[in-house]
Every structure is written in C-alpha cells, then in structure tokens.
Amino acid sequence: MGRMLAICGWVAWHTRRPFDGTRLRSAGTLLAPGLAVMFLVLAAVPLVVPLSDPQPEDVSVQQVFDATTAHPDG
Image (cartoon, rainbow, N blue to C red; front, side, top):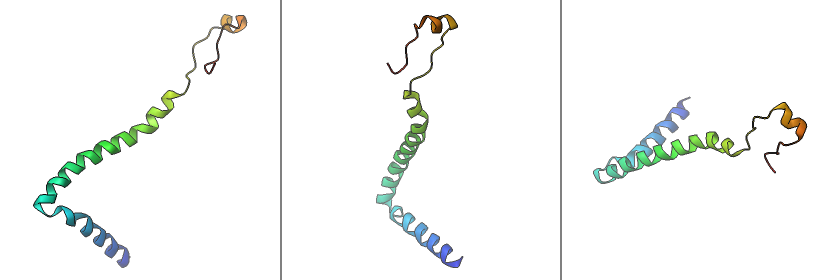
C-alpha cells in the first residue's frame, strides 16, 4: 500500500510540475479545453456509429404479400 501511495504521489508531482511556471501555466489552460472537447467527441462515437446501420421501415401486411418491399441493403 505504501509503494502505491508513493507511486501515485510521484505521478501527481510530475504531472503538476510542468504547469507550475507562469509561462507554461497558460499552455495548460489552453490544453484543458482541447482535452475536454476531445473526450466529448470520443464519448459521442459509440452513440453516432450505430446510426449509420440500415434502419427498419414500416411495412404493411399487403406490401409483404405483394412483394413490393425492398431490402435495406439492396
């Protein structure tokens, strides 16, 4: 447990360290909105990709008997 806390503290110190300077802090404030937008786009991908699949259409029984329906792929 102690090693894990030490590793987490080391990682936190190294990720915070580049943004401590005033010159690099402005770069960090520009980077954060870009990361937020990237994460939003990545989160939307699983929702948008299935929309490209062919969707079923409403068909009446008479259209099925008359064979006037078309396959969505064809």
